Image 1: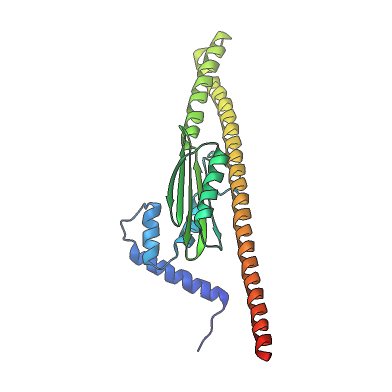
Image 2 (image 1 turned 90 degrees about the vertical axis):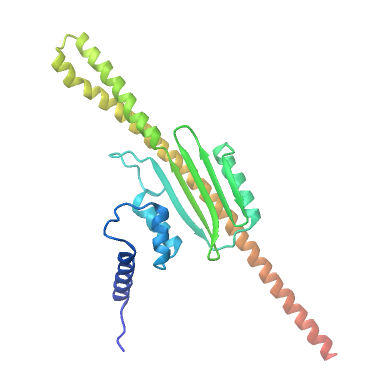
Length: 250
């Protein structure tokens, strides 16, 4: 029977997944929501966590990537798994941590094995999910400020365009020349807006990194505590066994 190397195995599995997905999608399918993609992947036997990781890397920049000066990054999203069972005490601590980091209460939905937390501001939103799946705890973070980008891309440009137009006319330029120069004033304002967007991006990165560090400390500490209890129990059992052997010997 023929054996396959790692490259061939990857190609075979990728082709099999492609065939499964082609059966699930009809020819008229063009755009799907995240939930629809997750449903199709479930039918194809692909794990939810794998699809969410693929969605994150394909569509949005995570906190390790750089600000896109061309498009103006307006979102940070991250998914991370921890090899630990989610406890009610974890949910309570994470909720307090999120509220403290953002300095706002937000809206929280609490379940035995899941926490969903939303913070909706006028021009930005943050959503966090903490849940257990397949014996692991998953943390999803998403922050979006698209509306802020729209404001910064529109109003400063228009204001500086008008100001430059009026100023050039006042300097004696004719109407045509003033109209040629005015967009440069708008673009200068746009550069300032994009600098502000980058500062926003860096701030959200720091918030996410701080949150992840706190989560890792929380869950690693819990892992260490559980390991200590397990070792201690094993030691106690070993002592008890030796004591029983001693009594039997007597």
